[in-house]
Length: 172
Ligand SMILES: NC(=O)c1ccc[n+]([C@@H]2O[C@H](COP(=O)([O-])OP(=O)(O)OC[C@H]3O[C@@H](n4cnc5c(N)ncnc54)[C@H](OP(=O)(O)O)[C@@H]3O)[C@@H](O)[C@H]2O)c1
Image (cartoon, rainbow, N blue to C red; front, side, top):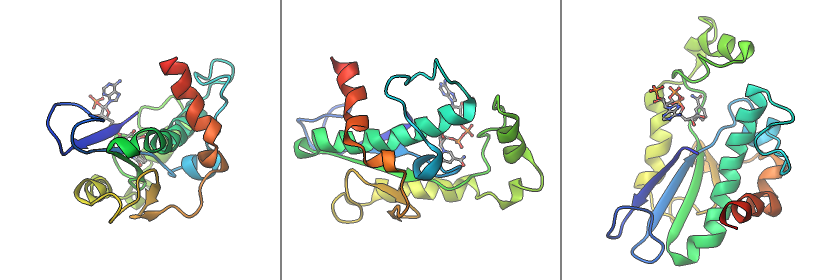
């Protein structure tokens, strides 16, 4: 899932009854995942019927946004704040070993790679909510791009059932 947690109370894990916790999740609009291209099928969450690396990636990033919203809905009143962010399109190792030839081309092409953002700048997008104050600098349950609530978000990112059902299936 790629979540990062900060806890201001005692203990070693995200706690809902002691102190306050922050869960920060990396999402992506890189190829339109959280914006346009991501598509989640509740009846094929593992992509058994229709697998492609790019579709699976897009869905996973969109699921990170939904996870954030549902975590907020379930636990914010108990002290957990959750936020999702897009780090930018970064020149990391991301995509360089993808099964998708298009993805490998985009992420390794000497023409495209110099246009990507540095990993250090991308890390700044993570540091921002980590250092910031939930409810003041950012709002729990939201998805941010460049430190602002994302303007264009995939319709499915607002679908309460899509956010709720995977939790219910996992937790029974
Ligand atoms: N790069 C972008 O433009 C971008 C944009 C939006 C979101 N993101 C998200 O940011 C996150 C980090 O991506 P990145 O750009 O930093 O990619 P990256 O350079 O490929 O780094 C991925 C990291 O995850 C580790 N990893 C991969 N599979 C693992 C596994 N099964 N178990 C444990 N560790 C594993 C890798 O370890 P090894 O080095 O040992 O393989 C590596 O340290 C991803 O969730 C990605 O979707 C990236």
